[in-house]
Length: 426
Image (tube, helix red, strand yellow):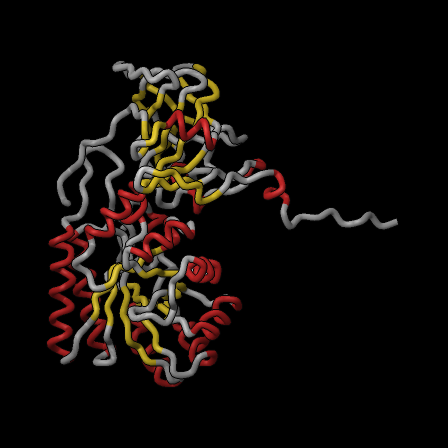
């Protein structure tokens, strides 16, 4: 799967065989739609790895988690809430491999209590976590997440390695962490290294070498290594996937060298998030205004950055298509700026990093037509909010020709749940 893709069209009439006009008629806009067939294919792509551990922060609806569990995937959790989501989806923290691993740079109070209560395996990103875990769960085993001193990412905000990143244990602190583990009766059995999103093979070879060096510092207690995540997916025509065969060979070669040195088997894990779900997801919105502002033609939607935050956060590019209500498919294209309804100038979906407004070539459209943000299954709904008093969108799962509503649209009662007005003092 390394070939460049040219598959994005500017018009679309269905998602996973379901007509967009029918989806909208039943569920309204904006709404998220996921194609389960895509998720199945992406899981199958990674069958060479011993363990596929889903980074659920990418898309954490419990229906998605349930389906991934049924495909043999285990899960990573970065908060107490994600641990509870995984439990609700049926993951067993005591399975082999660990059904749930808690990965973070800190323990908050609820998280450490859950780790103790459930006996969760922990992927530690800070030396302090080793001390705190040893005090709470003497005799625990841990994985160390190491920052190798360099990183990689499509945006500086998604780069998780190097001195500017808060993530992981600094590579020069490994010996200190091993001493802390001995002091607090904690066994180091796993090693994890993740440098950021958009991994390429050049950077990967550096990561493999760095991981092997740290593995020899840890020694024969090591039974698992994790390749981390960051596998890219195409967001534009011409972009390509990583060559997964070569990707696996690089990691497997490192694993085999460690097995030879240590004299026992080493489990090779992968921790994809975006790769499993990004291409499955679509955000459907309705065009509610079409207007000229100087030289710019705007399509204004009923979805904003409260629904999909990646463009305003990272200048992220999403392919966009139009579904005309009357089914027509015009061949001409016009330059368009796509924006949302929020009272914010930054509520623009076609922007570059730094907030610079960009244009997109799209078919002519009218109020009432639908605009689809594609490759929106990762870091889409999970980052949505109620900003400007907006209700969060429903989520739909299309599976084997059937549409399941896996999250209802929020209502005003959802919006003010937990709020109260205190009595006025006399």
